[in-house]
Amino acid sequence: MNRETSLKRETPVESQTQFNINNMKMNIEAKIDINLQKIIIDMMCLTDGKVIVVERFGTVNIFSSDGKLQKQLSITGEARSITQINENTIAITYHNEKAIKIINMENETVTKVFKLDKVCSGLSFSNNNLAVGLDDNEIRMIDLEGNTVNSI
Image (cartoon, rainbow, N blue to C red; front, side, top):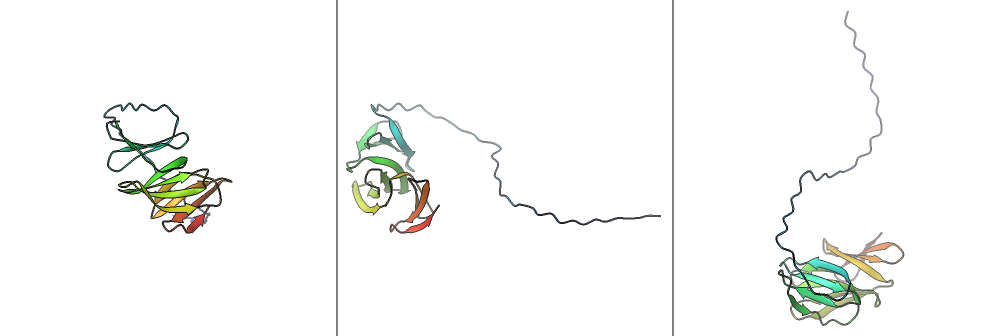
C-alpha cells in the first residue's frame, strides 16, 4: 500500500535584491605624488584621466594623470563637493553660499547656479540628476534645470 501525504503552506517571503562581488581585481599602475599644503576635502577622477582635488577652504586643482598640476579653477567661493556631469562640465557645491554651480571646464565659466535653502555638501550625478546632501539629513535630487525631483 502506497500512501502520499501532501501538505501545502504559503509563507510570506520578502524579496530582496542582493549583489555579491566574487572577484575583484585592482591594478595600481603608479603612485602619484601631489604637493598640496592643505587638507583634501573632496576629489574625483575625470573620464579623461585627470584628477580634480578640492582643498580645504575651496581651492579647486586639476591634475594631469601623472600628478602634475595643470591649473586651479578661477571660480570664486569655497568649494566643498564635486561631481562630473559630462566630459566638459562639472558641478560643485558651495557650502557657505548654499548653492551648486555648474561649470564649463574648457573656459572656466559658471553656466548655472542653483540656490538652495540649506547648506549643501556631498554631490553625485546620475540619470541626468544631481544628488546633493543637505543639512538636517536630507538628500535632494535636482534636475539640470534646478528643479527638485525628489527628496529623501
